[in-house]
Length: 404
Image (cartoon, rainbow, N blue to C red; front, side, top):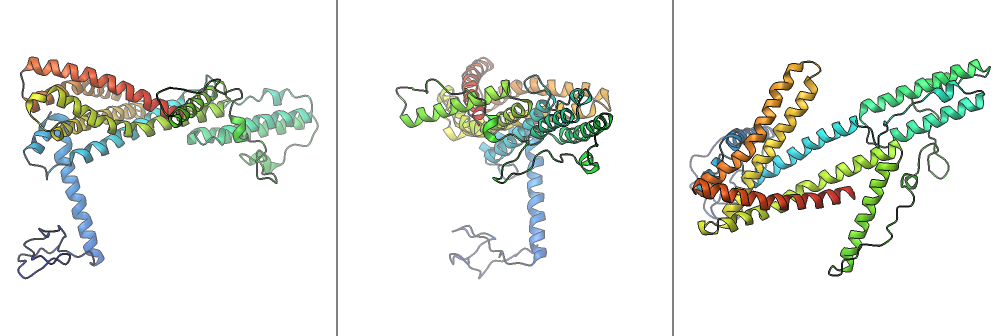
């Protein structure tokens, strides 16, 4: 991109002030026009991407390895080379919870819902049926169960493939049993189709062979007494009552519903919890900065300085959690092919867990510059208070998520 060496005689197109550089010193508008050839846009995009990449390289290594370095650089006015504290914390928070959610989903899909497998295929009723009508009835019952499990929308692709394969196997066994009983076998197209004849639309638009939404809600889940807190307004009590009612429905479905409904309830609650965690952490950020302000009130630092400390410390925690989770996922994926990889990745996870409290202590020592005894004492009290606040906030977030 061509750069101007002289700006004499040029005026800002927005406010008319004489220009002394690429940006107007009065309104901040750039001298460069947005109306440019496509190759100019591509050059600007590449320049922007490379600039962001350079800031990532300058930000992430010291964030992970140099306690307090980024904060002191920010206080010293050296900010251009690094990503802004809030943006850094925001992106790492979303990435950490996204990857952690993926890990939880992988674990959850391996576990059976309420003690029963998500896909339960039993062909004994078909193989022992004594009449063609009994064979067709047993087949339809099994196909209906598979249809309900497949329509939950929460099963991974490998389980859906298992459902399709099981459906075809059941039809083949039913067709063989019909031939043994002297009846006509099932049509070849029906045997080959994965879900043929399982759920058809009726005239009113509903599907036969699949449960209606109301059927997935267990009966008898009504709160005998609504939530009533005297000092809260009625609208808040009504909201709390609705949340408690939905939590009861989800928990009853998880424990006593069929496999498909239980899996849907479990996935619904997990997704709800993770959707409330990022906003919860954003609310806790200024609270943590307020704690630092109270414990370091005699250091005569502005609240904004404590907030920057809070943003950088939480950004480090989210980066550490992200690396720990990625190491665990990588170990799970590679262990079947290279069992030895689990040991170094496990050491990496343990080192990161041990480094987290040590990093925060060193960061607090370098920024506030007090003796070790005072720093350790304040670090313990700040951590103890924040731990209780974090536990309370996570419980509220979990309750809101379980009511999803």
